[in-house]
Amino acid sequence: MDVHLGSEAEQASGNHRNGSSEKTVLSDDGAMTLSIPRDRHGRFDPALIAKYKRRFPGFDEKIIALYARGMSTRDIQKHVGELYGITISPDLVSAVTDAVLDEVSAWQNRPLETTYAIVFFDAVRVKIRDEGLVSNKAVYLAIGMRASGYKEVLGLWIEQSEGAKFWLRVMNELKSRGTQDILIAVVDGLKGFPDAIQAVFPQTVVQTCIVHLIRYSMSFASWKERKAIAAALKPIYRADSAEAAADALEAFDAGAWGRKYPNIATSWRRNWTAVIPFFAFSAEVRRIVYTTNAIESLNSTVRRSVRSKGHFPNDQAATKLIWLSLRNAEATWKRPPIAWQAAKAQLAIQFGERFNLED
Image (cartoon, rainbow, N blue to C red; front, side, top):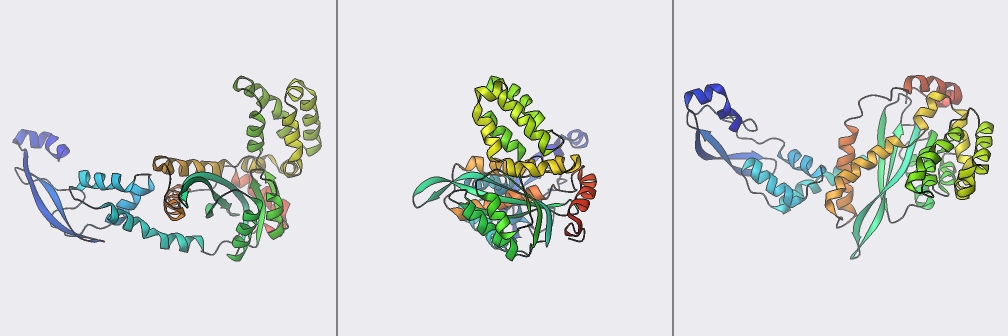
């Protein structure tokens, strides 16, 4: 109405507000009475519900969209009241958002592709009330990249702690949903995780996320030292071969930073078997598997959604919101990474018939 009355034509004619009128419309949840503003000359045409329209389509989707962006049920109640001039109860908001749980269940159990070129695994922690106590629970996420380069979230799982036994259960679930082969699995260095993957997918190359290793290395040093240590670690992961990388690690360990922080070299040696596959890849493939940025970007989307919640009353409430935020993130994945075309040719050579472009 403000925009309508602010136009030159309406100002020149002396048009102004003339109160409001009630209008009953039908939504997905039944009849609702709206307060529609009027102008003196009767030329105002509402944008959301046009004149003579008696249905309010997509009202549930609007509530769900607000909820997916982290708004609480009472915030949505106030927002709808301010925006549409109607009163809805928090219980109605909860009922509308709870309806997505059936979609979540169907999504979580949907069939998957037979083969994924790369799968990124990681976990993000959220606060959930469990048996009267609020605790940090791990929300496990997996992003699968097909041979075509397109990505999809394979599933989400909530568990009290991040452990290899639970990951074994996740691997078995992925296999039962149709996935028979994973070429490369990129993980965050969890102890026992490679064993859990290869117990179900024995041919999978398990690659530790290099950036996770670098971040762990940085945790030993003060802030002012981290830039210099990161520069000293570059010759290791930028080496042309595993042998050259091992020599660079020994040189780092014998250098000033290695002597000051011996735990850094120790952590790299401890994960070395899961670091070595990285050096067999071409530069194009390395750019794809270098880090779990793809999944960490997804994690940041989840964190933005849950930040305003404080904590969730139960696992279902957390699952509901996280799934909605994942759905929003997936909608932005329009095309494969820029480096994928070059990486695809390299992967086809390295993995042969296992790299199936039809999947």
